[in-house]
Each structure stands twice: as structure tokens, then as C-alpha cells.
Image (tube, rainbow, N blue to C red; front, side, top):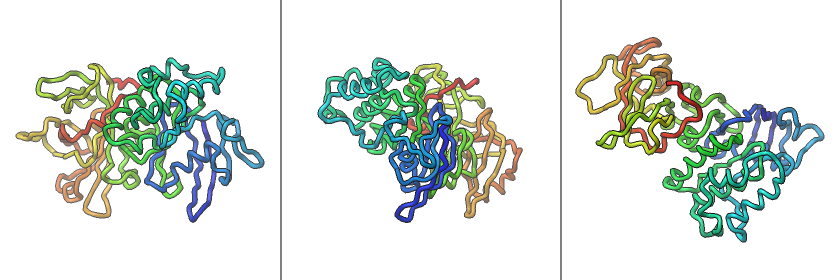
Length: 365
């Protein structure tokens, strides 16, 4: 594990983090602007010399009393928001520079990186001629070719518009699944995090408030305040079963069939689908005469009443947990409590394409 036990004080801001980070998959560090996300990355990379405490990789101490390993000896790759490609070198030369510096370190080779990020059409071009998404892919490729122990990604999509983000996210999923380099991914965009991460850490005012497997944290009503109520929502796992002539796709979940606007993925793909709590309606009996196509049996597992008029209801939907955001009045009128059998109603069009991604492991449906 990568372990941190550090403090940092500057300009009225206090960072205090004692945390272990998995050396596999994608760990997302999520929080609002100014919460300390990028500072944590800089401490890990050795770029914050004022930090106090201990940073270690599997017992190899990078920072401790009287000890400090400089950044270039930590074996980490760093992808910044502004990409920082060498402007006087072509894409191929940017990649070759990193490849040469890595020498014979184990890790992905040039061909694997070019294939995973679809860089072949870009190799002869200069950075200034690339789109934002293309520059991001090249910067990620260059960082990977340093053969890092871990890839640190500091909001790599923050400067991109929604169309460019949608273009690059499938490459990041492919990178996660095919290359295998562990990634620590900083973001304040929950849609990105839900698509990519296997583990989630929530940071607020310089402190880690929650951490654990992403499926568990997103389905936990207690984390909703840290995420923001509009972002509260959980993931279900599904297999893409078919496409219908009216433009809808059929997804097979552990609770039954779900219809969504056409999902552009091969049939049989295993998907993770994020469903926002505000898009779930509850009924005690199976409703009829509704326009909603997705009506699935569910069981209430927890209810958290808010300070205002709202309530968050955690539901078991087959083998997955989801959240529903309703009013306290509705929760009372429906007589909801742990163990209540009900029906979850999901509007097909409420699930945006950006909330559908590839799942890392078989769903076991």
C-alpha cells in the first residue's frame, strides 16, 4: 500500500491526512475546489517540501524524520491539468523521451500505450496542432511510458468541454482495464469518478472524511452531504442485452431488465450505470398506466432523514444498492422503514450517457 501520515500548514489552510491507498485499480480523491486534493498529490510526488510526516510505498519510506526522497526517484507518473507536453517535440518524440528515460523498467511498452490510447494517427503532429482531448491522451501516454509505480492524475479533464470529456473517458477505461498501472485520480466531477474508480476517498477542508469501495460509498446515505445532494446516486451493474428499433437498449440487471437510450457498446458488455437519487421514484405497489418503462422490485435497507424536508432512502435492487431522494412527507405517507418491500421507478431518459461506463470485473449476473 501507499501510506500517508502527513500534515501541512500554509496561508490559513491545514492539511492532515493519515490514509493508505491501494496499489491497484483507480482510487479517486474527490472533493470541492480548495479541499486539498491537488495538495495531497503534490505531497505524494515530493513536490511539497513543507509537508511534515511520513510517506511510504510498501515500507520504502519516501519521507520521514531526516529522510526525503526527491520526486524523480519515487517512480511516479504525474499528469497535470495543462498536459505540459514539450512544444518543440512531436507526439512521437514526446513519447520517445519518456520511453528512453524509463530504460528497462517493467511496465507497458510503446506499442501497448499507443494502442490503448489510439495515438498512432497523432504521432507525427506537434502538440499545438492537437485538440484538448488529444493533448490529454498524449500526456497520459507520456506519463505511462516512464513506467511508473503509480500514475497521479490531477483533474486531467478539467479543461475539456463535455464533448471532449466523453471522447476521452473510454480511453481512460481502457487504460484502467488493459495496462494495469494503479492510478490516483483527483477530480471534483462525480460522473468521471463513478465511471473510472474502484476505490473512493472523500476530502473536505484538508481531511479525508470517507474512504472505501466506490459502490459502497455511493450507496451510503451518510456520504450524500460530502458529495452534494444533486450528485448523490449509486451504481448498478448490467449486461448490454440488445438494441430495440425504437432507439432503446435493453440492459439486464440482477433486478430485471432496464431500458435506456441507445448505449453505444458491443452486445454482452458489462456496464456500470450511475443512477442519481433524485431520478428514482418509489411506490408501495406496482404502478400501472405510467410512461416510465423501468419499474423494479426493491427492498428498503436504510432511511436517512435530512434536516430539511428531504430524505434519502437506500434500496436493495436485486444485488445492487441504489438511493432515492424523496420528501420526508412521502417517506412517512408510504410507511417506509427498513425491510419495506416497494418498487423503484427509473425514467429511461434520466440516465445520461456520461453516467454509463465499462465495469472492471464481471458482474456475476
